[in-house]
Every structure is written in structure tokens, then in C-alpha cells.
Length: 125
Image 1 (cartoon, rainbow, N blue to C red):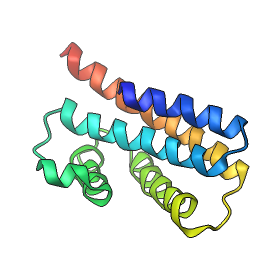
Image 2: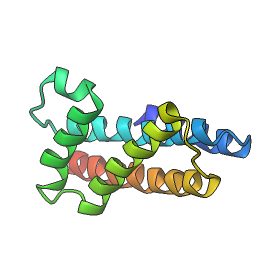
Image 3: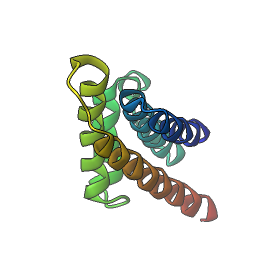
């Protein structure tokens, strides 16, 4: 979760510096790191090789955290959309608007907060 928090901070700084692509990358990785923490923190039975790939981690997150009702369907959808935006920003050369990057950062903040709450509630039990 510490990596997720640092990534959000970096995303905000990059967006302020007009590095939209970099901001999208860091916002996505905040979500990726939080999703990995959600799987590890609740003891989901996920093969280490699966959790290392983007598609594997997203699928495992959906299976173990969203489909179980522990986190909302919207969070799962947002993680998928964040992955799509990150691919555009990092690889296609197509423009991602600053408004889209701002939206992604806001979604990353909500995602990380939701995962943090999930992990904290588990630690209290």
C-alpha cells in the first residue's frame, strides 16, 4: 500500500508538470499495487506468476475481491479502464487529455482508499 500511495503522489506531481502520460502511468500503478495488496492482505490463493502480470492480477482481483462482493463492481471496472488508459499513454502515442488523467487520478485515489479500508477491516477482525 505504501507503493500505491507514492504512485498517487507522483501522478499528481506529473500532472501538475503537464506530463499527462506519466500521470496516467503512475495513477494506474497505484491501483495495480493496491490490487496486489488486496490479494496478498486477504490471503487470496493466487499463484505468484499470475499476480505478476497485469491481466493476471486484474483477473485475480476481480475473482477474489469483486465477485466475492468484498469490493464493488465499479472498482473492478475502473481498474480495467485504468489499464486501458495506461496502455494508450505508454505505448500507442495517442493523446490522453489532462481531464482524462485527472479523472484517472481521482479514480486511483478512490480505489486505493477502498482497498485500504478493506485491509483495515480485515486487520480489526
